[in-house]
Image 1: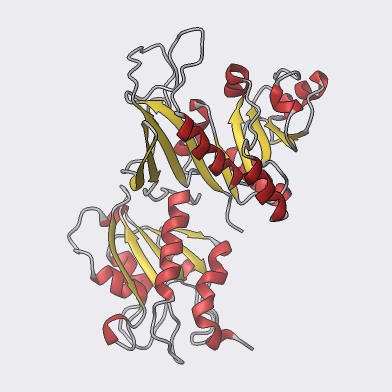
Image 2 (image 1 turned 90 degrees about the horizontal axis):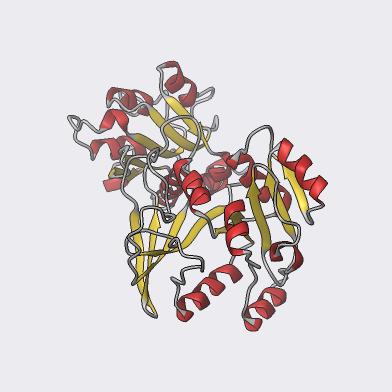
Length: 377
């Protein structure tokens, strides 16, 4: 099962600040935008904040609209989403409104933070994640133990920064307020340095009262064996391409995408594309790239099915085509069954040649769906 869809939500000034340094909280959202945020809250399974936001804002994190609460209940959901706070130290005020309002609460913390939180008598579920705060473990806990599929993160800047740096953010929603702060001592949305290369993809812009909503999606692939939110997006696209393949009784339906390290899509393809009955998806995608493109050695190939290590229809299998192109990272969803080539091990062949292979089995069902006629007993 994939990690929860992580949506980072924030209101910022035009020059990127979350607040000023005055004694009162700087109001950046408009009434119309508050209503939009309430709608997003109601669509999520959980809302997460950091300890700094809890201390500074003392939020309740509730769905304000009675109609939206009623719709959640009618759909079999609790009236309010699960409320989660992240704190490495566990040193939080037990009298904060977070604990005394709404439905269920969870504190995600370290082993030491859990001991402090219990001594303080904090309400809700206290979850130790180890000696240090492990964000991937936190998301896995919310998914596995709490059934969270869609997580809204409302701050603060430290939490947003850490999730984005680790490639765990699927979406960024920014409400851009017509305000300039101009104070270098004021808190910013993101901290300096340490981000993955690449531009974010602009998904939507919309006027909401006197603010502008801008929605972005990270595009840069991961760089190692840990999958990022962008990896999940691109592999999902490869699975969608597999569904476009003309059906065959003698070959799998596969989709593939080649993506540069900066998140630029270089090429895509699917099996039997262009009417070639023996064309493989990775072969089609790589044929759409320039062999002299200097971005290929840093690129990632996403394939819905493990690339073939042996084939009868062409001199070179897809593993060899990938390696010859200089690509050294492959993300796939589904190991090749023995239907046509018993004992195939494309992943092993790639790894033996020094490539990083990332397998996301939570996408195997989507990858296998266009091939049911071949694999059904």
